[in-house]
Amino acid sequence: MPASSGQQPKSSMPPKHTISGLKSPDDNPEPGLARFGPVYGEDTEANVKAKDSAWKHILEKSGVDEAERVYMRSIADIEQQALDSYDRAVVEKLKLKRGKEFRRMMVRDGCFFLQLSLHVLGAAELLDYSEQNPYFRKGSDSSSWIPAMFFVGNQIPCAVIRALMKQDFFKNVIDGGSKTGMWQRQRQRWTDEKDLTKLVLYQMVVEPELEKRVGFFSKSRHESRESAPSNILHALHSSLLGPGDNDPIYSEMKEFHDLEDGREDSDVKIPSAGELHKLGITLRKAKSNGITNIHFQNRVFWARLELPPLTIDSHTKDLLTSLAKHEQNLSESDREVTAYLRFMRDLAPTYKDFKILEKKGIIHVKDEELKRNMVHMLDNIVTTHKSSFTLNFRQTRRKITGYGGPPWRLISIALAVLTIVQTIFTVLSYFIPRK
Image (cartoon, rainbow, N blue to C red; front, side, top):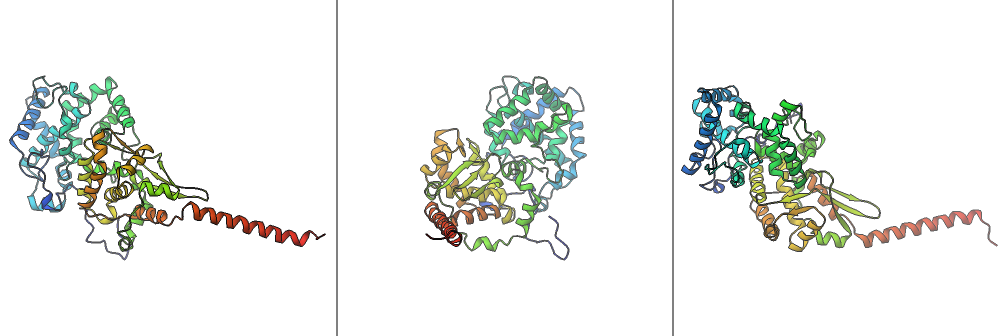
């Protein structure tokens, strides 16, 4: 947000959501993790072989001698925009610049990323690989690549994705799925299952192309270029936060809110789900998604905490960890996911508390083993990443900790009723003569 007149922008505030490396060198990715883009250097021999296979397949299916030149030219048209998607420190450290080497990396890594995305989204048959291909044949487990695709700093710029999706190979895949109605069916399935990973991939890779071809439009798409994600991890971050994060009033409150106010009681925890029940505070699944839509309502006869639903699957730990690492590059007031994880850690410090959240439909876990490890997972992510409650979570905590609970509420109501009755009788005594 631009600084108002007379104010200088805070130099400590890093640019939002550019592709940047890990803040701590101790967090470097595992050697076997596939590399997308330049941030983490050269890939392993096995991953290079997979990329070569994907690129060779595109050249064969394109059916034109100059296919490679066409792809390189498509990246040249948006090359500066792609470079601008990387954090300035990354650009300077790696000496990234326009040229054939950068364009070739974007083409090969980008095409590999897109084929993995489409395979994860159920388009294996449309990719048209032979049954001998170990990476993209129908039935192969492409989901094992998801942690690498969302690893912080390991993203392909969205400008590159859009440029490559205009090419014939990818256009044919989108058209094939559109003709059979596959995309709409799959999208409804992922929505019903609350599969955030696939919904984000769909919204970033497939949905913009459907809009161009069949006039299909989804409210989930970012309407302005300013708010449009610059990379897939940014898109995941925005989807998890929900529409409330784009509220200009909330953004302004966050920017001008004094963070020191939150540090005074930084050790104060949210009561657990079991403790909230004892206080008479009910838990309810919010109707709208997004962690910025957490609300505490305190009425005369009841109090309620509304929380958005969260589905936990085999990739959730990796994705949440990547988001927490990504937020270490943001200002403290923008670390909403880390604050949310801390909030949930406080709500469910034990398995018994977690079961309460599950019973209320606030958390849905697809696997029993994941369910048992949920408490440890939340605690591990929170304790290994610097976190503090952001504005909305701090306000919610104050409302909860300031709630008096049913006994005091009943006494207050009783006293209020007695006071009213006494007042009525006092007034009536002036008008009704005594016998």
